[in-house]
Image (cartoon, rainbow, N blue to C red):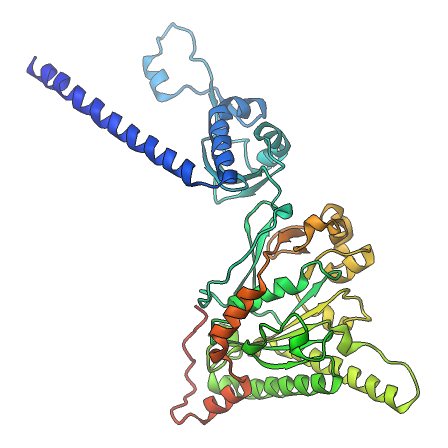
Length: 466
């Protein structure tokens, strides 16, 4: 009797604790809702509908399983001569998280309800959740992640304000977000070259500007530039970034030739000394460092330096010899620079063989293409397989709403992925270049200092990739 009275006396306290916790949760939810932007508020309401309607929707979409084996409680309470327990309908458990573009749903799998079943039901889920598109990907053993986007991330312009801080990982290039608003990144480790194609004004230079602004704060990255559409840096897109470049040239073929020769000489010296200095055959085993920086050569309007000149007069023959040698020098960098930390980024409107020689283009493992006018240009930029993915073709990106959207074959993903690259303002680019200009160093001089250091040993340098 006393025990029963004690329990009754605790009931008001328990109810009060539950009420307080519910009140705190409600206040926190309201605060989150008020502080969220407009798109996130809509997604928060959408997330509530997804949770409340999931059991019914899962049954209609065939994402449930009927379990005819009675549970433990049913077995204990079942009468010997009574009717058999009714089968149970099992529904996968879900967790829903809203964001600016839609919802992220993490769900469990069940016997006979795996990743393939979720993928087959994706179009039904998109209609029920009022989403533009829905993707389903594995999320570890026994789990899937369902991404539903209400508004199209590809047609929603985004901006990027560089933090001015060194990147946490020098092997990671964050390009932007894909068509499901997930971060799109590629690994630069062991990558010798990148090609970037697209019609004028499609977003090529802005995408490269973001690369420079993100990596400029690191002393373990040094950048050189060649812009084939200007005579001086002040005339072109790199006027604000040239302060962070250890070398730059315009459309003068002699200057470009001298720059390419200088980098090839650096490649040769690094190849000859890497095992003695770093203790490894591949720089990426220890990562870039201020003493041995990742050296990036950006060649914009690359066709300027490689075009074939035809003619028998001395001037034309000289230009033809220069462009042929330029192609040979850049080929050396792309084919032999990977292990010593040299990366070449080639930018051109079309990456056809007459713009970038195929013996250079086809060695570059990463290719991006912004909007293109012809299927042939898309094939040159992305490979012949793009013909099998017409919905992802850059030919479909000619609408002004897709300025800044690129297509690429992502590492580890089937097919092709469309990516919204953010816009970096000229003011932010100038700010970062000015603030990081003191980090600019010539890689060949860094190698001289490293080789001349009295305490140099053959022990590997500590990794400074992070």
